[in-house]
Image (tube, rainbow, N blue to C red; front, side):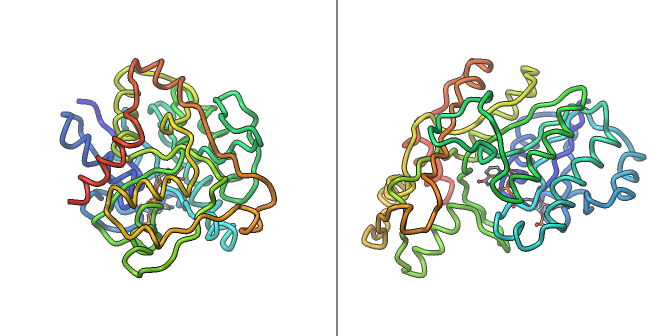
Length: 289
Ligand SMILES: NC(=O)c1ccc[n+]([C@@H]2O[C@H](COP(=O)([O-])OP(=O)(O)OC[C@H]3O[C@@H](n4cnc5c(N)ncnc54)[C@H](OP(=O)(O)O)[C@@H]3O)[C@@H](O)[C@H]2O)c1
């Protein structure tokens, strides 16, 4: 039977992939995270080499979906060593003790740093903060493995029913709405947000079709953060007067932040077209009901 280890299953993406594979496959699914939870079979800190060695002694996995990381940029800046351990050392430990597993590693679209945006997988990468630095380092470790898939997702949208210390993009937006706080969204920062279920589906298809290498994943539309937030607020019937457009200059951002990526490669290699952003927001809405 195919065995799969999913790391970071108390998080948004890991828990979603865990639920999907449990429901749609006959694989032997193991969830791992630092804390107990509904989707957690093994509680372990992956930056602890001995702990990872011990897990490896009790068996191997055909696939490892490695989503575990410290994902918040500001936390990574303040706690550089902890971020390095969680993002780089943890990946190194998995690569060392599971060298023959097929590794699916979650990197980020933020590794690209160009003014033009619309980056495909050949665009240059460079670290503009510590979080991105650790992702680029970890990518290097994964690339040295025999069998790997590196995903560089844009912002991932998902509704999580469980409480998290750190909130994802959509949950932060929801918090602001509930607190009736005015949100200032840049009209000139573009990105390609993607619904978490689409991410999970791409991972599953990527495993089934055995694609290898580096892939961007984001929706096919480039949209500003302001327009995107407005789309979400319209669909959820939220009070749109809580949203104000600003220019990124007001946020004292040093350069225009063009975070757009092209996800043509993964769609071509999997023979699958992602739904439109409107459809994704609709699915996000349904997931909250
Ligand atoms: N969400 C996005 O918009 C986005 C965009 C681009 C890339 N990504 C990447 O996609 C991946 C998944 O993101 P996400 O949104 O699901 O993140 P998340 O919700 O913050 O979840 C991260 C998970 O990793 C666990 N973890 C952290 N350090 C660990 C360690 N040392 N050992 C074991 N588990 C550890 C966390 O456990 P705790 O509960 O203990 O913290 C949590 O379960 C990450 O690698 C992230 O960098 C995410």
